[in-house]
Amino acid sequence: MPQPCPVPAEQQPINEYQDVKESWFYGWGSRDMVGYLKPVIILWSVGWVVAGPMAAASFAPAKYPLPFGLSAAMGALVLPTLVLLQLYVGWSHVGGRLRQTTVPYEESGWYDGQLWVKPEEVSNRDRLIVDYQVQPVLQRIRRTLGAIALLLALGFMAWPMV
Image (cartoon, rainbow, N blue to C red; front, side):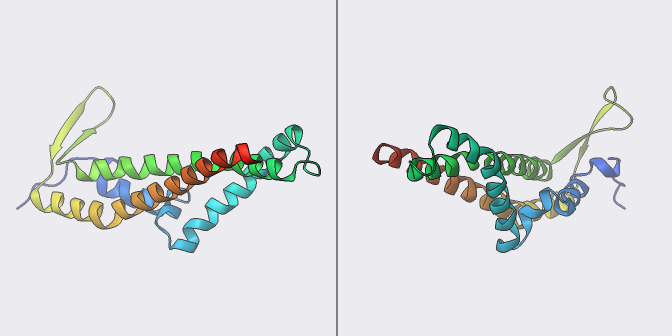
């Protein structure tokens, strides 16, 4: 008969994964493509609220529409980039905890740390979750951040022509 898991429920990697997957913030990383891109576009639009006036202070929109639009669009990418980085860190942390064969945990406080070695069936289940659930989310976020980096690079390359 297998030993029961001594790790408190809130510190078990499988439960951390469920919490991340079901959370209002981190959960949108695992939605379908439209559900995933919608918050990114909304964040970019909200970024215009800050970046637009800043760009307008440097480039009068009526007089310099292209430099204004380019600088505001590039500045507005800061907010979705920061949010996507946080999303990546959260999913990456959970993936790392799932992939480990041992689970560090604390029974009642920082001073009584323990280490639990996962049984083979738990370790295999966790690796499958990482491979088929966590890695696709991380890959999607990396591709989105790559697209943002490409847009920024194109914006900087276009800047001398403006």
